[in-house]
Image (cartoon, rainbow over the protein chains, first blue to last red):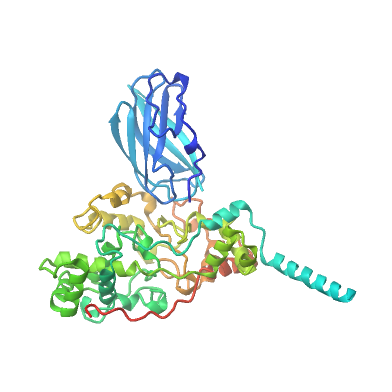
Length: 134
Length: 390
């Protein structure tokens, strides 16, 4: 019941365009998601997400220009089954663009789409990332 | 001599042929999926919210309390009245019968210690909290809030057993003694782990690559298992070694209890959970780290919870009907027929396409039943519990 976390073992190489963004998650592993305006890196705690077990996400986020950004919400759903999580994550700001989202739980194997609502100033945006639990 | 060689060759070919027929082809993905339903049994339960969980004296006290009718209001009903060892820790009835007939079936207690939500609606977030409810419920044991304390204080054997389990004599705080009674009951119930089954032998052999041993598993059960993890997608909810996610779902069982009365299922359970002084956020949680409160802190009450009920584990299920939360299906064959023919119209408006009519052929239905019955095993007679205080 382990996450098909192929990326968990991948070294997170800080992209050259990352500037001063705090993408280092401390364990050398994780995922990077970006858009035209935002950069975000995250990893799970514990590293392996297991079906039916609570987990947290450690998230670093900033603008592509290296400015501060805020994480507003984290949620997840299974598009194939049209349902979300039975749990609501809470977010704690750790400073310097670092956040911890606590209380996520994936109760079913399959493809989960994680949604991150981020904001810098008046501009907000939703970043998404898919992971597959087997 | 030539005839003898031919005969031996034919016999060998025949044997190989038979063996080849007794083990279907299993892809690496299928073997991985099957492997996720084991190994069995899992490690013993340790519940950090319950300081007598896994403690021998707590288990013994709990088993005596489990069989004790003086915990009920009329002195005639114990936990064992409905959760009978000889009936897979249920009662064989469609609807549970306490002081009155209830609206839901008595759930089996097999492997209950491994859950995170308890009761059909998940109103309990610990096994001990869930064990308090029937003690107090006027429709069930109707014991009242002081009865457990009086028993532990006034009965010499129980007082001795309590001191051995909890390290002090029973005090005067009746609510505390009610909770401790429930914690001992939970410590006992958590030891009820179902035995290994023919499926477990097959699963281990398949994972080990032992084709000979795997081929002893009946072909019908193998075909049923392939359906279970394949086209039927049963393992999306009935997953892991216990064959349950431990979460909740709406599978199209009518939620009208009687005309004009509905059972809201998980929606009502979450309301009772938040109102309970015995949930893990309260003062009776023995886990000082509070790490076991993550589910209850973050669970969200959603409209889609209406009509959802806990996904039951499937071990020993073939022996413990009737089925569904309301006991509305008598036989396991009826359960398979339900999933084969369920009407999407019977799912309420928030229903997800997880449940759909499978349209099984008679052969496929029989194969699924054969697989489900391979999750059953005989259980040896239960010995009498050890004395409370020798």
